[in-house]
Length: 308
Image 1 (cartoon, rainbow, N blue to C red):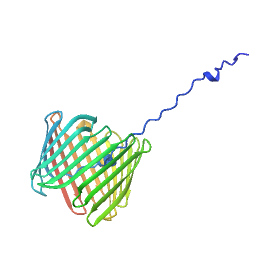
Image 2 (image 1 turned 180 degrees about the vertical axis):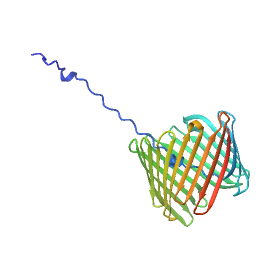
Image 3 (image 1 turned 45 degrees about the vertical axis):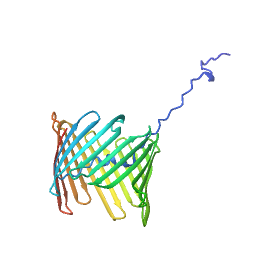
Image 4 (image 1 turned 135 degrees about the vertical axis):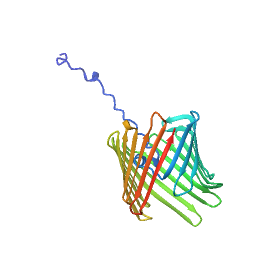
């Protein structure tokens, strides 16, 4: 008898192709775990500041900064930056050389290099007039779903002193990242290490991050309500100083008015806010900030003009 039901033989049924799982993303750098939350909070402002940015070419730009404050003498800073041709992302260009020098001759400089497709190196130098204060060397390897970093701070072979920091982050899922930090320091008569565990969970509109170790804990929560409103909550506890702080920050963007407003309220009785206003078509940005610490009875306010 023929196939009266009109069914196809088993051997001719179409086979479903196996479902391909998307690869896990790279978790990024350990130092950027709390970046989204920290960007919500306003930066401290005090005195009057004038910043003039000048782009000399597609690779080189400079900035002049004049700062006058009641807390210290007036200062001048010259900032110069060079960016190479290798651009991995909108915020990553290699090689990059950045330097900042003030009127007293003190220098802060850093160099970022891309040694291989996954291997990056960074060198940081800080001087106070003619004396070296800090020299630091970083090496970072970014795999498909993990990042490993090793940092050497102020290595001194003669004095037998060094600070070594190791970071590791692993993406377990598309939303969950786990890792840790190991800080080791050694100098004559003293040696020690501190281990810190870290975790980060990223949802569609919010990110929660936690660092906990023998030195204390650092937790942050970032939430993006919409394109105009962002909020952040930060908690820090230091076991050595026996100190605990809690802060709430918010970020409000008014695109039609070309304005950005940031504010914070802290458990140490500190409140502050910064208002930024762009002045198109002129390349000018005005910023006004005020911070008040009720506990210490301190008030700081600042005003800045950025050109370019």
